[in-house]
Image 1: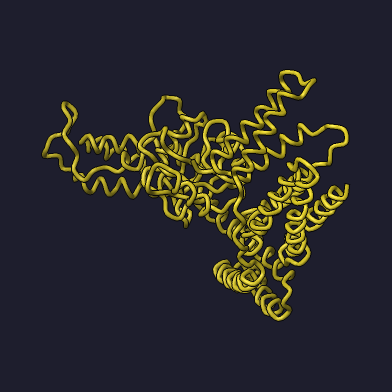
Image 2 (image 1 turned 45 degrees about the horizontal axis):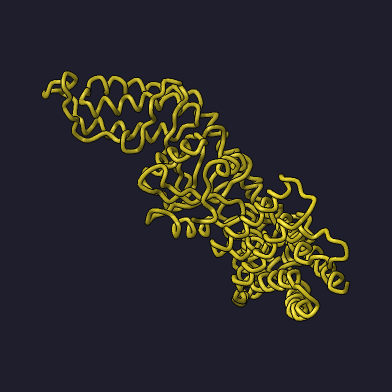
Length: 496
């Protein structure tokens, strides 16, 4: 099972979050609604979620991209959408207690397909892309087909239907909703061979569409132009701030000169030239940022192997202690047992990071014994959680920022930048906390101090942390100080 796969209550929580901010998604359809796998995540990049869901899912194909929810409509934007995914995902959402309409957009923002119930309360099932695409030749139905010598041409009527469908899909949501039910009826009439009735209904749809576009046309065009100009101004402002924070004065001067010319284009209302200029500056900024990224984010060495047997032994010892602790009421004892069970499940799933976390929580809960040496792993765990919470704030501000280095680090969290060092440190802290006597503690301390020195060297010399703390998006971060303070506190605990 993929770490990103969601269903039931977890799915509902992320749907609520998707009403506030876009999430990364991946969808791997199975044979039925109960077999589909739907992944959602706030921080990971869409392609990472997609690879995980494809590897663990029931099918051979996966669609991934970004997901947002507005009212009762879930909108998915993906590079390579799958046929009928709107219908399948809608059924999956309903099965998991999150009934939503689904709209799938291509990478250019055009509607690929949708499964939308217009909410008229009649229980009519919305048409899928297959159901709304009429066949070239109508099939005869008993008692309902028109005479074979009908002067209407089914192929021409089908083409007219498709042209109308494209125009209606381009309308805004309320307008599209009013006409979509009639379009479904027209599709059924053409399929059923009732061409005369279908032609009359298409005539009425033509008139309704003309009325909508005539009354709203000028307003829509002006609104679209104003909206495009406003978006370009915001993009120009973001780029101006990012370029101003660039350290290379030569690069900064050239890009600022280009931004000055774009500002004049925006003042004159030339949206086409402004869009080209903004794209050119963004591309140039990405190139220099990518070059810095290659130097600033070296691939970390592989993490050291983790002794799962040692973790199982520690967990077993802690589980035995639960029954020996006096003064615990039933709910407290059950909570400790649940922690032990969570740790055991993580070990069975070969997820050492989760197992280490549960073991540390269980040891911390069992610790209040007079004279016992303070635990060290909770100190680092709390600092790491604090740092990732700060990165979450940065990620929310980094949508479309145009800085690949910052996007990459904030998107995958603190673990990506410190993976090998982090694993070694957490294992060292866990083994020190589990040491049964002075000799074992002395040996564990040597290993731990080596891991701490490695992590401290990274914190003090890495260009990544100062870059995050001084991010040009003005999000207040103190990641370097957070990690340094935690290492200092662990040092003090070792000196006890």
